[in-house]
Length: 483
Image (cartoon, rainbow, N blue to C red; front, side):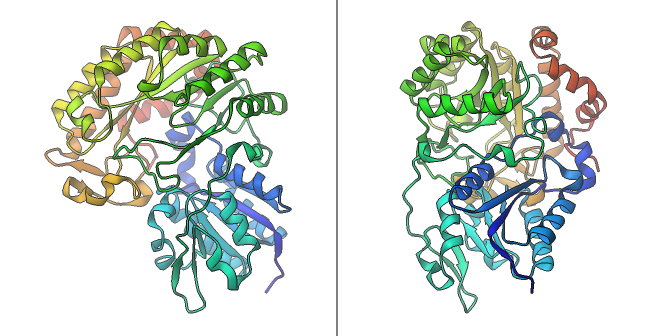
């Protein structure tokens, strides 16, 4: 058995589908987000005398498996760690098996929302998985890598096997990390960063651009959201840390636009005000997007955000049927939401609506209400996801009573109707999905808005033109991946 380097660790972000399909993946063409969680853990470990590397299969699919093999053979890391969504978990298991064949003594560790939701099942059903980190990864993984085998029961939030092969979950609570104490994510470990990563087309004015996370968790409890990692906790970086983070990205990588990938960017109004004042007082010629809940914005704050460089705001609308919405989230007030959307538009900030089709209780009438609602408002862009019940979401527990569900993990990417609500059928839902999108893009006001992107976001138009055939194919087939 080869000698392994105890201080060397490889992080892998699995692709989740066949490599030959990557070139035709409409999702990759429109949006490639850096694996910020892995980059954060890598930076944390490197501060503590480890030497980490990251291979992002999603960003470089053509050669990712060869890169993993070459790294394992040359560097002989003692540990390979995977961060997986539901759709990429089985690909991670496959790669873990490959790693064990190449380096029989290597330790495989899995983290992320899927395994945090499955917990013990991840080990009992998959022998390729040695350990699962449940929840926040930095401290737990560091303790795992520095704790003797006979003391693993002391590592909080770890799932492991004892000498008899029994699966054990150390359920003791862990004190959450103070986010301002963390180093900036190790962006430099991502191959060809930032050029390899792009925000969704027509969602940014400048390049290079990237994503950034300034908080963890969400204080709300929507039925469809997986809360396996952070539960209902909510923490955020200070305005000072946030400003320094952006200055670092701007200075070291030339980043000119940021998307804050936070559930609730404006939840703490004082933090956002202070951050905006810093951006105004010492500008970096950077713009930003963020996601908000309508309850946590007002016109004065929006004006300040606009002045600080806010280019677009996303809001979770989910459905235009208020009775359906009330079944799945708190404060289902569509009139209030409409008023806030108009305020964002009045402040001169682009508005992106986030919706889902196929929630439990969805009907053809509720879909029509969603269309009428969206089309009545000054929404510049929107994303319509196909509802998928993920392990770890509250609604997952009784989902089979609410409709038919094909629980195929590899297909659970929110771009396929795997769940069909009672009273609906898949074929009709596909028709309505295409009708919703086409109706939006055929509206003259919306079309003119995209025309203005010729000078507001010329890079988006170049990307659109370069992949025109694939976009037209997606519009006809409604399929993310080519068969």
